[in-house]
Length: 622
Ligand code: PLP
Image (tube, rainbow, N blue to C red; front, side, top):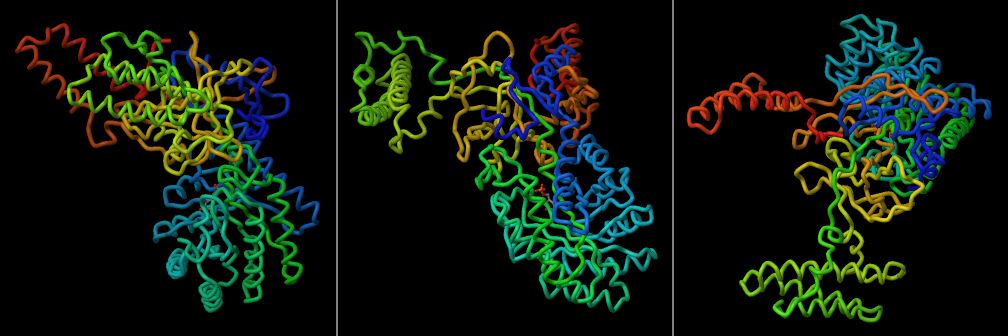
């Protein structure tokens, strides 16, 4: 499962073969024990385990990486990050970042009015920045300006030129001096899946001409001191550090250019993009990154300093809007495996595939194919079997093959595939038509979760998340599996798994035994919680906020139950009393026609009410 490669030291496998969270040296707790306690309390799964200590650790790591680079290079400015809350607006996440970041004056970034309203209410260091990005109306701008009167270091980023007028108008009306940033469209581009966020065609930002117009306009207004920040962003999850360096150089040159044009700037904001090594390969593969947090910080400090020295401008306060890197590690989705199906296990009984006298000739032919597969003829056997299966189905449609023979034929086909898969498992070259064989033959582990609610990026953009059983890790797993969720959508499945710079179509898992078998989806704390959707009315997952204590112990500080069915239904415009009345009316009518008794009506209404208040996921008695 590559745990040491992707865990960044925040998780490990214990000697007993259990996944443990390790938020700081000496602190560790087995995830299975946490889940067992949740179940013992009578709570239902799935659940997201959140570890605020891991968030605190990531905030510290990022800030200390910048601090040590600043000391090493004798850089005269300092670093002051901001957390873009769009990455995860959950209260525990924002509050954990704000608390851990307080002493570093680590701030927040809001991209909408609602996010700004949330950020303004946070306790922040007086120097900490509150950056306002995204397109803005007057209300957004006013709220941001009010923020300055509250003593918050609010900077309004101009994303398009016309926003400047609005800002000036509102600032005059309120009598508040604004602090303004400008987002610049770098020609440099990121690397990986969000490459399009940068470059000339980027959605946000001003070009060089517009940038200079902002400077001139502010000079005319006698407000050039309001322009304090240059902001850039070349996309999330930058996989290649060289792209960071190129972009930062361009940003620093632009910063120096603005100073030369008469602006009195303070902050250089290099945006987000600091990656997360989801597959642990440490490469430029889209789910990875070829650099560390330390290298990221050092390269930014060094590059900005080099440009500032050459251009003889003061070194700015460095800002990054790292979001993914701060929050991805803190959350683990726990999915119970509730059932297993698959072509090699449902009907494995040998007698099913042995034809008898009365079996149709096509079944006998398929049996012959299976008996005679060799290393020399497996490709031919495969093609014959595919043809025979097609014929079997055609004959069935015409009424010449009965259901029993169809069952035998289909079981034989699977047996043929299994035999071929075994023969070629260690072959280097596999013919194209057989490439999908492991996936076709894999078990389907049915997991109690919704892909669309909990891991939407796996569905939408093929994002990879490490998935690992919570225990039994000293036992060799024997089954090849894909995962399916409980939505009624055939897209609700995971068939993409990490494989060091590659994507594997199956995950090797243990045969689930008597005890519940739990899988953890790791590194899912960035974007997934907020992008998830209520497909099939599966709602927000329950979550446990856990603090790890010395001696392998832990506290569940808070358990937040997932959304109830009622809330999901109500979010679609229905009201609970309306639903209950409708059921009651139907029950009364049923009593009249005799399909329901009075006592049954009582029980039915009770069950209905209980389900409305229940969890939307499968609830099994443990
Ligand atoms: N800042 C801006 C302007 C963004 O658009 C984003 C996300 O793409 C971020 C910061 C956060 O990026 P990341 O999560 O890669 O740190």
